[in-house]
Image (cartoon, rainbow, N blue to C red; front, top):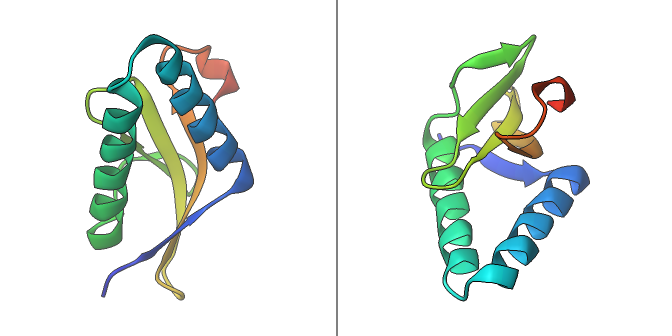
Length: 96
């Protein structure tokens, strides 16, 4: 059964910030970032069981871009809640 993706307000804000940043420097980069994000969503819908980072929080690195999605799985409702889209070059102490 496919999992549903739920994006938190915080993660959505971080995603929009990344898209805006890439739009400043390139016409194609925002499109590629969105495509990479869409591919990650497809992966999470079919198999969300990636490495556990802390307690029940898991992560999936985006391809090409230096971002990781941090998420939790609700097995009872078949949902994946994305809680953050974190830039991998930031201070690791600030991870969600």
